[in-house]
Image 1 (cartoon, rainbow, N blue to C red):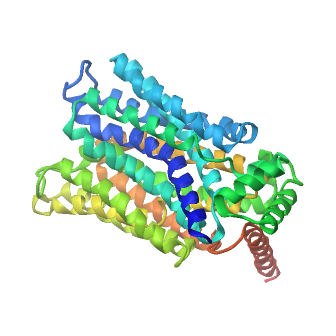
Image 2: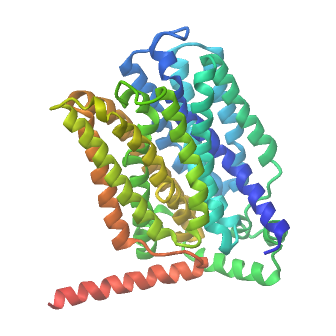
Image 3: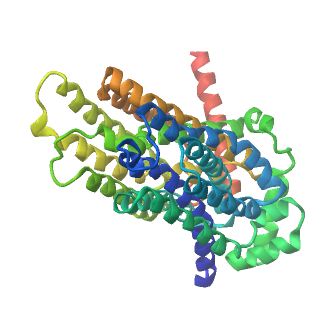
Length: 461
């Protein structure tokens, strides 16, 4: 692939995924603002139950928007649906700046959730469609890097500035996003889906310097996939599509219900005192630094080692980390663990390390690779809903279960989820590394045939 073409793909990927960076800002904001809101450093007071709702209401917005976003990306295109996020995010950040009360904050978080649901639905599809086969996994990893970068931004800036300044600074990011992304062309796959071949050829030349042969292959692939109408019924009733959905859904559920959302939102409240070294904020910042930096290692490994091994390794490792973390709090009930306070702090830093090596980004890669173009928008919407619902349940349950029964109970729930999802990935997932879209569909077909043979042999016995 020519270097200029690769650079254009990289620019488009970075520009589009700044919308994910902004979603990371919204996700990291509660941890960055917790002390200010709960210790009366703002113009209004917030209680612990209110703070729980402020954190979780974002996920409610996230649950609502994916299905409309799926239709929007098919009606208006991938590009303009992503562009719409700019004004939405700007308004969401400005609202609590202009109106200082809990209701404006909740509405702002809800709007941020709407934007996050749209971004998580459309951006993975867009990235999967513009990238060449050899770099598709690596470019899709930028999604996770931007998300972690948004968290790091809030964690670093939050302790240094006032509540109002933090919101103003965060509001500048969607402006940058609009300025960059407005120049990015539409997805060639979308244009072919709409029968706009000349425009698709022009966009393909911009992204990949593609020739007529590549365009014809892409066009043939789209025509084959579009023989069946893209509906939710086709997504769930077609055996190949349904298996792909199960693989993606399991990875998405592990990504959010395995502890990530709660570690991000409540880490400052769950870490024990005294702090082994430094301040709690130092460990929160290191958490985000690792979450961002380790993604680059995942980027280097995903197209070498493969998707499935990294996913399984990541989920098993997270299961062990959360189990050990829970064991500390369990032992704390019966003995003085002050000398071992370093354990939950070490687990806090091990979590983003293991998370970013696999489960943090592979669901996005799977989404862009496994689903055919006719149901890709519907599948992306389902993924976003699963992510949002898992995050909402995790965040709402965390404080209640932790304060009612102990932190160890919630941590062991996370451990169980991670280990069960690792087993399911081992049984169900296929390796898509280096495969074209048509080859991946053949692999799904073959895996279904193999499952049928195994089932028939079991029945005969």
